Image (tube, rainbow, N blue to C red; front, side, top):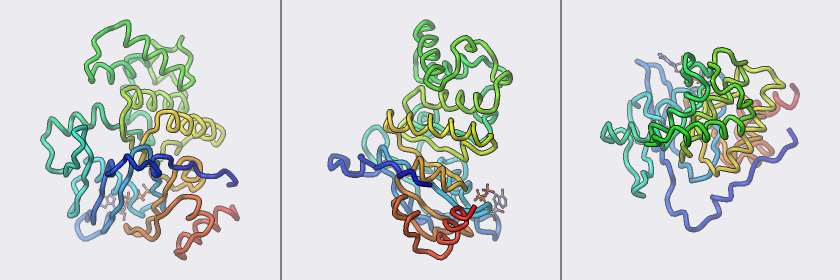
Length: 272
Ligand SMILES: Nc1ncnc2c1ncn2[C@@H]1O[C@H](COP(=O)(O)OP(=O)(O)OP(=O)(O)O)[C@@H](O)[C@H]1O
């Protein structure tokens, strides 16, 4: 792991006065079991935040609460809407929440089948997100879909194929195109390279890193893989048993971990 984590230029931009998303004391119980507890952090425009930890540490619970897919037991999640005001996501009107999910946010699932319409063509999978933001011009939609297939390295000749005819890596790249075509301000990613061959993972990571940089996306990415966090993220949160054990800049945290649990995670990778 000798690749330096990306530098967060947005963090040094004085014109940005408030975070894009602000999480305070977020807690989710399943009955008496802790899913995640007392989590607080901010994410700024253009910043990539990795949430790492072993299986069962609460990463998915946290991601699902932040993205309003799961109501928290307590705590708040606020988001800077396009009016520039931070709104409590769980007090939003349904129409505003739908707007976020359709246009302002993306969600890349580990299993592409959860984020794609498998019986629709690749072109339709990308195009229908554009239609959701009001694009009605067939020629423009198709042209944009072809452009996005190209950006995620899918041959334009496959535009009318259904994703079920695609390999795992192609499906994941199509899911990414579908999510990014509307230029979202915040993208949630849940183990986006999980379940893929190592060589396919490396190519996908490379592609993701390029797109995230080019588009200046804010991303919250859940991964158990520190190499993925190193390559993509500016900042990291390390979780264990539902709680944050350490958070900080990715380079600092991986080069000089403070919490014993993070030291263990990092040393197990270095020995692996
Ligand atoms: N639907 C559920 N009902 C009950 N307990 C749950 C549920 N979902 C998660 N949990 C529990 O909450 C805790 C955190 O789980 P979570 O899935 O968020 O962790 P994770 O870090 O995402 O794990 P993985 O990497 O394996 O997906 C675990 O103890 C888990 O058993």
